[in-house]
Length: 181
Ligand code: S3P
Image (cartoon, rainbow, N blue to C red):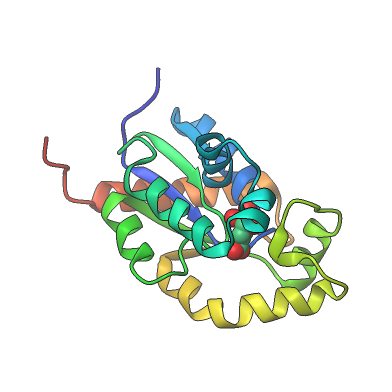
């Protein structure tokens, strides 16, 4: 049986562990796990890379907004959000209205290690990946910091990261006003 607590949105830059941590957290909470990129791929019948190449980034950001506004259940889900989902104006507020937000964080070094072999992240394509990461992360840092509790995923065992996420989720879920029927 799945539990119907408020949704948990894991945000943060690419390579901070949102999907790995999200899957484990969902299992422990008895909630459904969703990955916004995968949901968008299913809804539009093509990969994120194809969406970027054929429709452009603004279309992808529109799809992310549609996913948040109506493309997933209102409760009972742990959602690993694409790294840029929370960046456009208004997205943070939309997420806040729908659940608990936790931001995962990792050092540049770790992000580079975790994404070294990635071929499905169009924004990281290019010769100098470290520079691409810096260029993308720089302007987003202040937004990530505003999202919610930051959980470090660097140099600590995965089960500790998951336990930290669960503690924060349970505390913040308990503090949320009850949803109107
Ligand atoms: C993006 C991050 C990706 C994916 C898309 C754009 C971004 O998700 O949504 O390639 O803007 O940072 P991950 O954070 O899962 O890599």
